[in-house]
Image 1 (cartoon, one colour):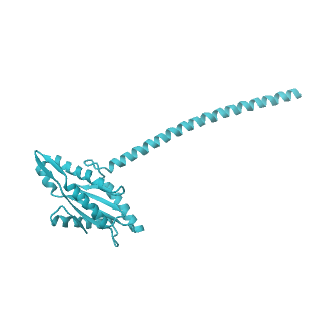
Image 2: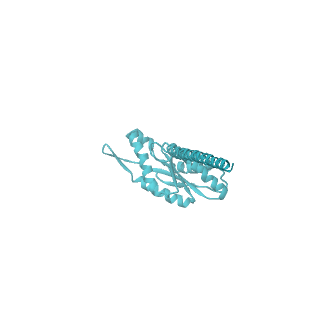
Length: 220
């Protein structure tokens, strides 16, 4: 009877060991499947994130000049305006307009006109700080957002841009092509509730600069 009971206990232990081995094997298999699936999921997530970033970058890029575009400007100016309204953090805006640009296109062709726009971007970016943002607003107009900058600092930067662009020269059939810009400068001020008010002042400043003879900086 004791022998039978010992045999029964031994069989029960053997069965238990086999069951535990099976459970352990199944758990290991499931762990491997989960680990592999998680790694694949992580890779797919990284790829999706990378694609999203590339798409966002493409959507914010001006195809002609390679600079940021109006879409990027709209987002940045809204963010700066929100910071100003919430924390009182000032910023300035530059509106750059190529002078008599239609004449350049009509006389020398759009290829030369496009090259002028590309050079404006190329020459202006090195003159700005890392946290400033330069974007093509549309046509021959460009905007620069300068965070934590007053009108005096913005005017100084605008003068550097104006002088640098004024030195640009192209040769077209042995004829020298030059381009100049008029720049309107303004600073966000108490009472502003929308970034459109800031832009309107810069726009008025550009208009007055052109009225006064072009190729100059005017602060509103």
